Amino acid sequence: MAQIKVVVVDDSALVRSLLTEIINRQPDMRCVGAASDPLVAREMIRELNPDVITLDVEMPRMDGLEFLSRLMRLRPMPVVMVSTLTEQGAEITLRALEMGAVDYVAKPRIGISSGLQELATDIVDKIRVAACAHVKRLGPAPAATPAPAAGTAPGHSVSEPPRAPLPRLSTEKIICIGASTGGTEAIREVLVPLPADSPAIVITQHMPPGFTTSFAARLNSLCRINVEEARHGQRILPGHAYIAPGGHHLRIDRSGSNYVAVVEDTEPVNRHRPSVEVLFKSAARVLGPNALGIMLTGMGADGALAMREMKDAGSYNYVQDEASCVVFGMPRMAIQAGAAHEVLPLSQIAPALLNRLASNPALVRHRI
Image (tube, rainbow, N blue to C red; front, side, top):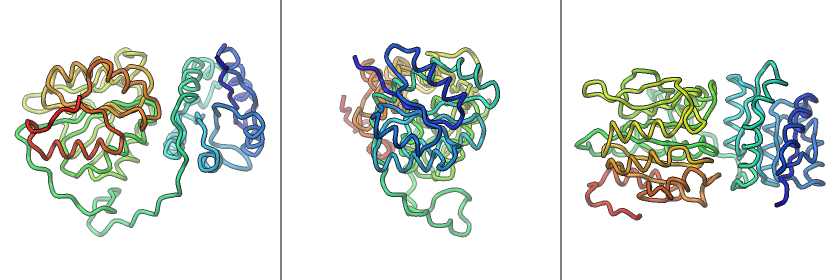
């Protein structure tokens, strides 16, 4: 099998050297070039035709985001971003993922040498996944969103006309979403169409500490529902989405007649913290038929078996199809586990969910 060819783009000679060493230690990949800035990288890409690029954000002559934007419009290819563990780094990384970057590595601000060596397994795993990812050409920049009208809640989009409220359900439903690689944009596509009175949503997206704060704020500015990081013990309410904080598991529990969020830093599950398995197992145990499960793009098998437990407990489950996934790992494993009722393109998941919520569930025919 041919080796994965990687070009490293970073203005730090130390980082270029470390990443080159980490990559070249792997029998299935090779660093074919290391560029100090995007203009040098552009020529390397033309000459070497790499399978994956690792791309720094802050560089001379052209910043990483501008280079990524041009690359994804003119010559789309898998990119793994390298950004710092800061609030600004998180916000820039989310913009990069929106532009089409497959994944990111959050490098430490201090102790770069030891920090990157500790992240070596994560780095090469992400490069392997990126090499197999479905990469799409970046389209034209979207039109600016109209300014909110007077009296509108700050940060919430008013670009679409308000929908009629959903019919009140006889039982309180909760939507449970799991995702990993490619999930930040997939989650956005599911949440943005939902009306302000949608059922509560709980989300586990594989992200490190610090990044989920920016992720929640970004979604909150785009959605009609309120989106926030989950806090331990808070009540789970309709019209709200709760994201597992990076580095912590999120599960659902009961307190009297209410559902509440449990946030904890117990051991990783399936190598992840937060883990989709933890969230979905709690949904099976606590929610039963009051749960709606959604498995989105991501590598690995985290959450697949627990999603089957949800189905066995009465949940209705949607799984993203292969063609629309960045990485068809977690959805594939969920399907193989028999956890899916419907396998749908990403663009059809929110409409299908809304149709089910507005219909008599007994009349909805399972597709699988």
